[in-house]
Image (cartoon, rainbow, N blue to C red; front, side):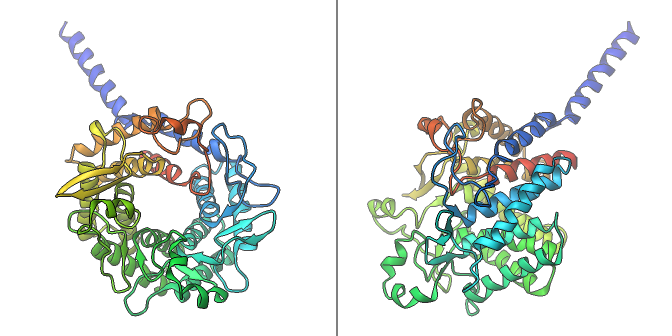
Length: 445
């Protein structure tokens, strides 16, 4: 009997250890791998545009290709980045390398402006002309990010020269040598005299005052410089990476654990908290708490610090934790059932002013929570919230009929079931990156 009980106890202990070994934070590793592969298969080779080059942009809810296919640099670059990353993780699947090669050729041959430099914001394949007479550093950061990632599967001198060329162009036209940081809006020579005289015209572009500096562009500059420095570790890129790390971490991140969205040229925060509630809500795109960006930035700060110093420094880790913890406290739905889009503090109380749960915020939150468990294993909230978020994405965000993630969780946005699966602002990148990084974590356990 004693032998039997001992054997039974041994089998139970071994079974638990075996189960733990095959799970990552409560999720079966096989499920994570399957989810990664399914996600990539939802997009590739479907998005490869063999007619006009680059990637198709718009697909309906059932993945039927939309008639309009205007191409934006942000989407094209994100598709290239995702394919390049997938080619590294799954080299046995040749489609990812082919997709990346295909996207790279379109970027350098079609989207680069040979007259004034930089990547065009949008291209109409029917006319092969730029639809806008301005460029965004925001969009060019993703081009730099994608080119640097692509160089990991094609380390030719040509690709690395494109990395350097893109970096140098952005630095020459948008960097503020006096107050540091970068402006986002770059006007063509033909429009500068007309449009800078009328700020209302530039404001209508939807990117804020052209003399401001913004959080969204800055965190993605940080992201792009991190990967650029990884593949091209030269002093000029290192200098800008350090600069953006300090600006995002020490200037843009506030003591309460949130990021301010816009700043003046000399880094005075744009803050409407003293205005009326009506004014704040009318201008919420300029001043609000973006829970998704805050928790995403926690990861971007850690990644930049690791690339610069070999490991994350203590100050950066503390700020990353503060960004994560604030989002956990104020941005999540009850029981960590998804993360809301926007909040604002009225009368010292955080209110959710936009309840939709965007796909990219869910993905970034889920991944950052998994990352934070590695640095703070004693904090039991992170793994609990991660597992809840994983399940939320599978139940309320993933389309089990047609494949792909909805734009927003159906619990708050049921009409999204028939919304486009892909468009200029939705490609395979945010969710793809989060899932692929999770898969990497399971391999490195």
